[in-house]
Image 1 (cartoon, one colour):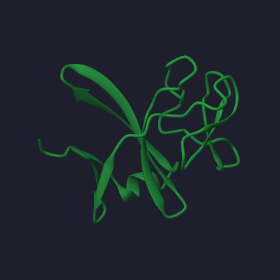
Image 2 (tube, rainbow, N blue to C red):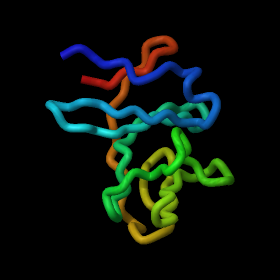
Image 3 (cartoon, rainbow, N blue to C red):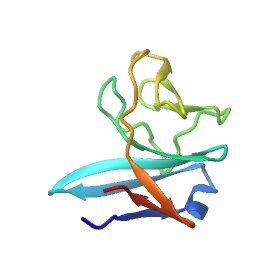
Length: 111
């Protein structure tokens, strides 16, 4: 299976994150890639509380402080690096990591 291009590093500059909807065997899989400090990470865009997307606005995943990932539906705050819910209705649960690989400036879905 060839790796699918998700985005480029520069796509993360404006908001710190980029949402991508993948087709996995005919099913939609919403994911997002984020830049936090020097790290680039991927998660499935689904809050563990209600299985809804975290964001209302396109590519908007961080709280106003830029410290936590934020679920706009229920106000949950997630650690950007671990994906663990720190505050909100799903405290102690975690976002589902989405495997990525980076080659130069291009970010791919890992096979």
